[in-house]
Length: 270
Image 1 (spheres, rainbow, N blue to C red):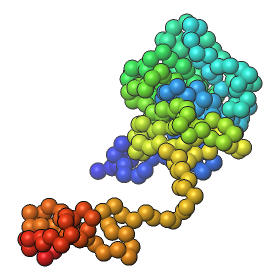
Image 2: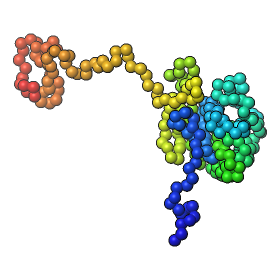
Image 3: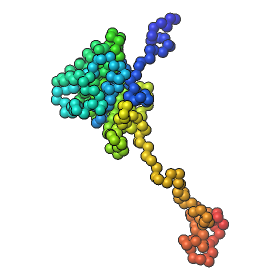
């Protein structure tokens, strides 16, 4: 039996390249796929990925950012430079969510840009997600560019069929020195388990750390307090238990009874 067909062959398929969010490549996104970003700081995460895309595959092509006309949250141009060069972004505003999905599909199918972002009022359906996956594959095969699609959805997201789902929010409980800190959660991935990171902007881009952030111990490092229910060093252990398991005190101890009073010999310490 011949197994030349790719579906019948045991040979591994071609390795799909990835886009790394940090320099250590601890968090990465597969290209030629559609990913979902949700949470209050989803726009900040998308801008970080846009900057990494321009740095990794700088072919001079812009990044398309698709939004709706009646969208409540909009990007503030003066706040973009710390995340991404605003001159490399092309903004497209449309009336309906279906128009935004159509525009995202056409941009990915063209293969002319490395990244396309669409802000949506709600997660798309499975059929629409599959069309976007196929559009990215068609663009990569026809034009050589390896486009990646991002959909930004409110709340906790929930689009079916996406490659990965990420949630990012500000971490006000443990702010970073000299900047803001975020909590990044990988909530869904086909080949990786859920995980959380503490993310902050460094001099050379996003920096990741464990979440929750490791806090410094008190000033007396290495000092261990005596275990509870254990006698202090140098003092006799006045505890014992009777046959029923109840704790008794030595008759001469302050809490063990009257001095000189004999205790019945029924305990295991007798």
